[in-house]
Amino acid sequence: MPSLSIHAGGLDLKNPVLLAAGILGTTGASLRRAALAGAGGVVTKSVGSVPREGHPGPTIVHVKCGLLNAMGLPNPSYRDFQQEIKTARSAGVPVIASIFGSSATEFAQIARVLKADAFELNLSCPHAEKYGSELGRYPDLVESVTGAVKAAADVPVWVKLTPNTADILELGLAAQRGGADAVVAINTLKAMAIDIETGYPMLGNRYGGLSGQAIKPVAVRCVYELAGRLEIPVIGVGGISSWEDAVEMIMAGAQAVQVGTALLGGYGIFEEITCGISRYLERKSMTLEDLCGLAGRRSQ
Image 1 (cartoon, helix red, strand yellow):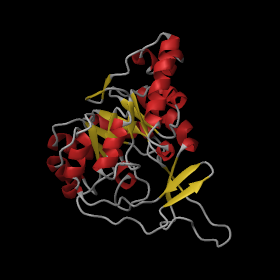
Image 2: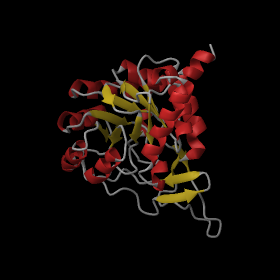
Image 3: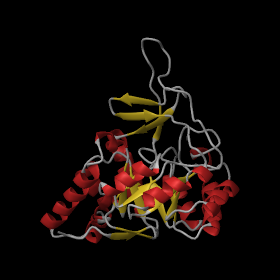
Image 4: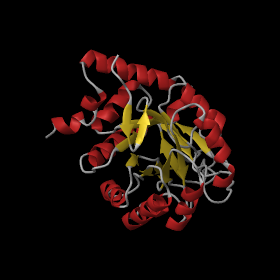
């Protein structure tokens, strides 16, 4: 079978299918279980400098086209999360710590102390005041935050970009100027749902982020656009629930992919996707390198 091992974003991965931030990354045990189930790497939930309870419930709503969430970045703070990362690292795959802050200084403070194999900068959460996309929609702030973390950390730095912008490419270029080792595209789309019997918004925060299969075409477009212009790797995420989805995202230019909402169906999704990619590559007599960015090369 073709090899699925890859070097992407400064990390050596046994395969290009990773656990995305926010779904099962709340404990070291769940991260470790994802790794043992076949993930090539795992991304933690986002952690910040102080504990946060998050938004009032309901925080998750199922809709026909996916999942709405408005968790509000609940976390115990990075100082109390180090043991969870240590537990996850015992599974033998890279552990990428998703971190957030309200300023470049706050991001750098976390990166200076927290120990992980890489950092993923959450500059894209659509439903947390003063955090996430409230910083990440401005190219100058993306560049300054990225540069501050690069100066503070001695591990690879990935920047997760928001799709809630008029031009995601300018955000990717800003991350690249700041020294990012990779960009991750995309986070959830800002969205909401209303209960027509009561007239009330269904989420406690009113607005949330839409994930799941409905956003995959948006993610594919963003990855394609970024991969065509950036000199650093793109990690694709958004709506991947099958090996076919992963192949499409890699063809768009993603060197690796992340799986999130599809984990609601169980940890077996990692093996399903990696086995499917292997069989596809064997059938096509291709390598991952051949597959990556194929759509861009064919459109030239």
